[in-house]
Image (cartoon, rainbow, N blue to C red):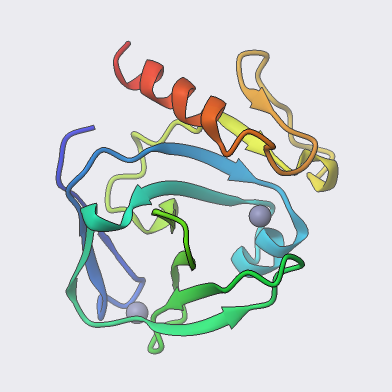
Length: 152
Ligand SMILES: [Zn+2]
Ligand SMILES: [Zn+2]
């Protein structure tokens, strides 16, 4: 992808940029993503923390309850409520809510996770990586597929 990638919240109070190639892009159909996005699924782009910075404004953080008790923060604009990213302690990458990017036309997810709770009208492509719940390989296959797609 052509860097930097830029994006922001709905009201414009928060702007950010990505200066390193994203690691992968996938859709998550878990019930938490459905509720958080107020939609059918969430679209997550894994971005290395040192390749991400805020250009304008600062997000508000709240702690998301997780089953594993690992600390996970939801970063959002406190003026318009747009969720920007999820930041899990100890992980090298942020999970950016990809719909906040300015250019969404180029977003091609390589896989779908938590399809166990996916809406039943959604169809998946044969070539997509499909997971019943969370990937158990540390997202390796999703990252590998993304890299292959980017270099195709
Ligand atoms: Zn905003
Ligand atoms: Zn999810």
